[in-house]
Every structure is written in structure tokens, then in C-alpha cells.
Length: 528
Image 1 (spheres, helix red, strand yellow):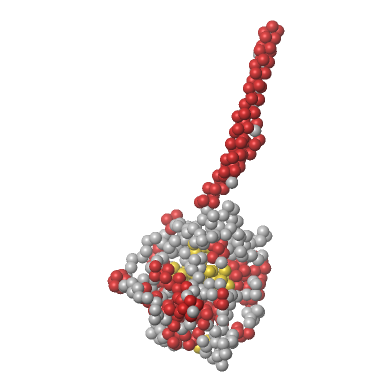
Image 2 (tube, rainbow, N blue to C red; image 1 turned 90 degrees about the vertical axis):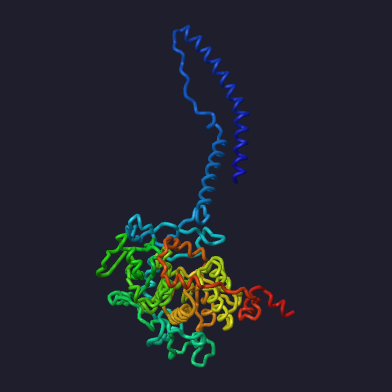
């Protein structure tokens, strides 16, 4: 298009310099002859010489040249816009989540001090081929509001037969928050489905008690616990531990959304000190602490179940159904994300519409197989214990994990992006969250690694809406974590120095050998 514009410009200049120049010379000669005649007659009659009138510059006489210049400037503007845009789209309109007759909450929802920098360091698109059109059709705001209210009042509609059972949780005191179960004990709960006879169906034995954390205390203040129990519709939750992120307000929240949706964020002492230092919260908190739409739940660091802040964040991330026992739907939002669409529309479009789903989560923009995620985790040091990652992967290969293939459809990938998770609090979703949490405590807080293992082996099977990564980028904005990391504990730093990388032995004899051969497509060659 740029070459075409330049070509038109050259043609216009050629036209202007040839025909127009000749016409201009002829007009000048005629003008001089007229002025001479008029001057002679004026001097004879005593009249003044007439003044020349201002004329439009000749450059504007050529319509083709003007159109070419306009086209050139427009192409230049669009090229610059696309080159600096995060999505590479010319005009990417944000979804209109609310009807014209509905109003949003006032913006901004909270006025942060400039030094806090809640909107700094937004990340560009991570998709290899980002699209400019949204693949999610949002319903009318009032339709979503009324249907979610009706489902919250009458939880029996629409409920499959499997949801008639009530998931029972194992109680008592154990050595760790999740109970520290062995591999075989954890796997046995994956295979408890299929009814009492274990026939592999979608029935569930309601007499089974499932381990689901809370074998040790989670230090929530009593006043906040009562507020969490009173949340009966949709809960939007997040957590910031170790002052690792900023507290950001959602965008596009409808005026009536807060009647059905609760916003809770869990923070530890380090995060509370940073909020107090910026005067976002008072240094000595009294009563209910709120920042915009968020109700802030302060958790004393000394009472948290894990030393690792990431593992403490896993507790509310996967056990929301236990922290909010009366909520019917939940949306987990990593603290690095900022919602840009009303939560009611997200729940209605991703969980309720098109037959409904138990859970909705984005596909990973790059990785499809669990092994790819494990390699990326070790390569980019997202988890330093590489030998532990090897043991985890070999455990899953030994107990039935297979690489993704079309046989796993309707699951479209083995690796999710769990920055935002939507759940319907029913038996299948709650069971999946409990069993996944047990794997996270057993190995590490990297929740993409055990995701496919738990999903594929669990009975009853969970219905997951794994939407494209482009949808995630259209409903939320991702930011970098805080650039200044909190000071590391000396004991953890010492153990990190002693940590070594895994050995580079071959895959022959490994429990993941068959997995890798199938992943690489060499299984058929070995059989020949």
C-alpha cells in the first residue's frame, strides 16, 4: 500500500509539472498582456491600475495530488499506530459489556497516590498471532445479572445428576496444611469416582471424605470470616503476599454489580506495610479495610501455613469454595492482572452460556504439553528445584499422564494460563480444586504442571471451558510484578545456593520414556 501511494504521488507530480506548468505559463502570458493593455488605458483615462486578486495555490488545483497526499499521510499514521500498539490491531474496540441504558461505577474507583504506580509496567501481548476481534460474545448486562441472581437463589437449576451429591471434606489435625499425603494416597482419591462400584462413570460416592487442606489453621480474622460467609453470589478474589504486586481496581464494573459480586483480596504484613506507607490504608487498621471495591483481608505472616509466599497464595487461589462456602460462582484474579470486563458478564459468557461449564480457564499462549511447561519452568527458573521438577514429571508419567492428542478433546490443551480462573462451585469443580491443591503442596506451587494429570485421571470428569489466550488479553491487562523484590530470608538464600541442576542423563529407562516417544512421534517407528 505504501508503494502504491508513492506511485500515485509520482504520477501526480508528473502531471502537475507537465500539463499544469504549461497551463500556468500560458495564463501568465495572458495576464501580462491584459495588465499592459489595462495599464495603458488606465493612464489615458486617469484610472488606477487594478490590484491582482489572491488565487488558490496551484498545488491545490490538482485533486489527484491532494488525494495522494491524504492517502500517504493516512497510511503513515496507521503504520505508526500498528507498530506501537500492544496488539498489532489497527482499531481494536474494547468489548461493550454494559447496555446503553446501564451505568458503570464512577472512575477511578480509588485515587492512588502517584508514587504507588499501580498502572506502570503493563506487558504487551504474549500471543504469537494476536487477533483483533473478540471471540467472546457478551450478553446484555441485565440478562446476565438476572440469570446469575436466579441461579444463586435456586442452586438446583440447572444441576446435573452428579451435583446432587455433596462433597465431604476430611477434617482433623495433621503435620501440614494439606495433610502431607503420599503419592498413592493422593492418586487413590483421583480414582474414587464412578460410583460405589468404581465403574468409571460420572457418579460420585458421597460417603468419601476428600482431603482439601485446612488441617492447620488459616489465620483469617473472625470479622472478615463472617463477611466471607455472607457472600452468596459471585466472589472475585485475589492475593498479594510478600508485596509482590500492586493492588489494582477492576474496570467496566456495572452500577448494580456490587449487589451480587463481592471483591476480596488477601494480603500479608509486608503488603500491608507498603499500603500504609503510601497512605492507601491506615497504619493501624480498625474495622473493615477497603480500597475501592476490594475488601482487604490482612493475614499475619507468622500465622500463614507456608514460608513460601507463592504457596500461601495457592490457598485462596484453589480453595475459594472452602473460604466462601455460600458463594455459587468465583473468579480468581492473579494480582498481576486487572479485570477490564464486568465479572457478571464473564461468569455468564464463560461458565453459564452454551450449555454451561464447571470451570473456565485460558489456554497457554505457547505450551500445549505438560513436558513443555516443565522444561520452560526449569529453563526460565520459575522454580529453582529442577531435580524436584524431574521427580514430579516422572511420578505423573508413571501413573498415567499422556501428552496431549486429539483423543483428549474437548480438552484443547494440557497447559492452562491460570492467571484468571472462573468456577461454578459444584462437586466436580470443588473436587478438582482440592485434588490439584494436594499436588501443589506435595511438589511446588507451579499449578500448570499437575493440571492435566489431575484433570485426565479424575472421576467424575470435569467440564472445562479452555478459551483462547486472545480472550484473556481482551478481558484483562497483565502487569509486571514489583521490580523490587522483598528481602530474601538468609536460610532460603543459603538453600538456594546449595541447589544443583538436574543431571543430563538420557531418557532411556525413565518412566517418561513412553511419554516422550509419543510426544515426538517415534513410537510407531520403534514398533516397525
